[in-house]
Amino acid sequence: MVTADPIEHVIVLMLENRAFDHVLGDCPKVKQKAGHAPDGLNQYGGKRYPQQAGAARRIADDPHHDLPDVMVQLSGHRSVKANGGFVLDYARNYPNLAAPGEVMKYHGYGALPAIQSLAEAFTVCDRWHASVPGPTWPNRLFAMSGTSLGRVKMPNGVLSLNLHWYDQPTVFDRLNEKRKEWKVYFGDTPLSFLLVHQWEPENVARHHHMTHFYSDAAGDPKNFPSFAFIEPAYLSPGANDAHPPHDIVEADLLIARVYNAIRANEELWRSSLLVVLFDEHGGFYDPIHPEKTAIAPDHHTEEYDFTQYGVRVPALLVSPYSPNSVYSELLDHTSLLKYLQNKWGLGELGARAAHAASFAPALQGSARTDTPNSVDTGHPSAEPAAAQDALTGHQAALVALSQHLETMGGEDAAIVAARSRQVLSGAQSQMDAAVDRVEAFIAHRKSNARQPTR
Figure 1: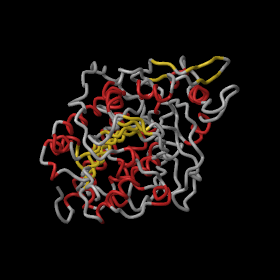
Figure 2 (figure 1 turned 180 degrees about the vertical axis):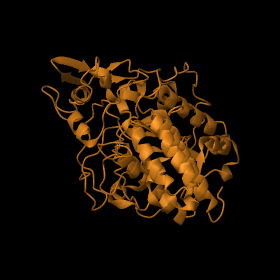
Figure 3 (figure 1 turned 45 degrees about the horizontal axis):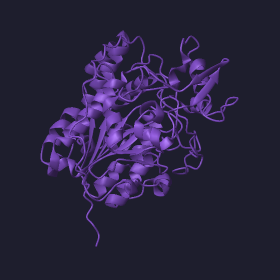
Figure 4 (figure 1 turned 45 degrees about the vertical axis):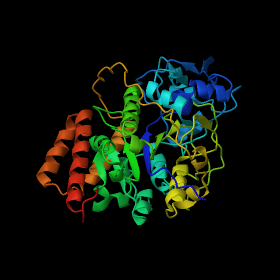
């Protein structure tokens, strides 16, 4: 007799730019599985840089993580056989750094109480790699569609848009085909709008601010979507994505709030799986060299051949059906797609997803009764961030995306012109304009949706 699948809601919280050991390497369960504490090493300039605790909450100099940088980071150096170039790459990109060893540091157990306590209580996936040894956009495209159509480069701002027509089928399309309800909950500028199909009014209407997530989670689970994709706030003020220079504590608070909201609704909790995931490593050290056994998702190899996975990233399966364990099957972001495809009979999403391992074997059929009722949100308040003189690379890319969305926002030309003048006053004004553009785009598209969605 086939047992009914108890998981009716899959909720994915995807954060930014942190490596596995950087976040979870000091967790007791992870150390027990590895048989030792984090003990990786880099050498640079005649000095040894071992892994050590004490990673900073804020890192002003964002470690680079474009494909060429990652290739340097994964290279060997003298007695270090692999992954010996992290300090080298960081120092080359920031020649005046006083402490290039910051990329080797990790957050000691207890420094990030929400994600680390969830790691101790639920399933840690300790071989989940980014799909691409590169930056945010291609990895998020893989998570949502199984391909980046051959692209691995990020835009360099509005003067170098480097935007592409990402018109591939997406997991959202496949859910629509099966009439499965889905929503994207976002902080400020959802990156699901990289995908052309997401611009359809009916799909835009499924995008909601995070306040809606908390109210939906408190309501009747019958009205909660089958699939929820949570995007953090990427821009200041209020950024909680963990992308430097943002305070990683704010991302930990977001994890706590999401878990606590689901856990507080017993009926929703007993029918849900929360996947806590980071899109890529962000230039932070991890000792495990990614395998070169990856499958290209399609014929697109314009900027890369996609045969190597990216660096390991933190990944948790959080559910009453997630045992307290470490799951060591090789996974990447397309493993999420494979799980959803198998679960709901969704259509194909490229060769990588077709051959990916699902994490379904990590789950159990009976519900646990020993899961935490809540996790800690008692961090000390983050100090206000200093005003930015310039955008980070990721923020510049988001501003570029918002400028493209503005062309479809249906706004009066005078408003667009005034906003264009506003952005000349500095980085914060550019971020504010990006949020305004996205809000206008969403409002305009929702007004054209054929019918309301839940």
